[in-house]
Image (cartoon, rainbow, N blue to C red; front, side, top):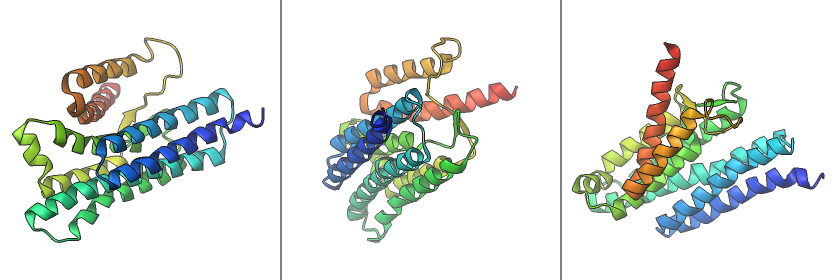
Length: 236
C-alpha cells in the first residue's frame, strides 16, 4: 500500500521525463514531436493529481515535484520554442543576435507563476492567470501552424519578430494576470455542475476537426474568452 501511494509521484516524474524528451526534439527543430511529448507530459500532469486524490496520497513533496516537472515541460520547452522561432526571424531580418533570447521571458513568467501557485490559496477550484500547460500548448502550436497553413497573413505574422515578441510579452503577462479562469477538473459526475467544462470540450473537438493545428491556439483563446464571459455573468 505504501508503494501504491508513490504512484502519483511516479506519474509526475513521467511528466518531467516527457518534458526532457520534448526539449531534445525542440533543439532539433522537430516541433511536431516536441508538441506531442509536451501534450503527453500534460496528460501525466492531469492524472498525477487525479490518482493522488483517489489514493489520498497528496503531500507537500508531490506539490513541489509537480511544479518542478511543469517547469521543464510547460516552462522551459515553450521558452526554447519561442527562442528557435525568433532565431529564424533574426537571420532573415538582420536583427541583433541577442534578440532571440527574449523568448525565454516565457520561461521566466512560467517560473514565477508556478512558484506563486504553490502559495496561492485562491487557486484550489479555479485558476488565476493562464495555467502553464495551456500556455505551453499555445506556444508550441505556433510553429505547427506556420508549417501547415496556406494563409499568407498568418505566414507573415508568424515570421515577424515584433509579432513574436508581442506574443512572448502577452504570454508572460497572461500567466500571472489577476484574471480568474475556470478549471477543467470534474469533481462530481453532474451535467449541470460541469456544463461549462463539457461545452468547452465540445468546442475544442470542433475547432480541432475544422482547423487542425490552427485550432490549438484558438482553443486557448476560447478558454480565456469563456472564462472572461463567465466572470462577468457571475458578477451580475
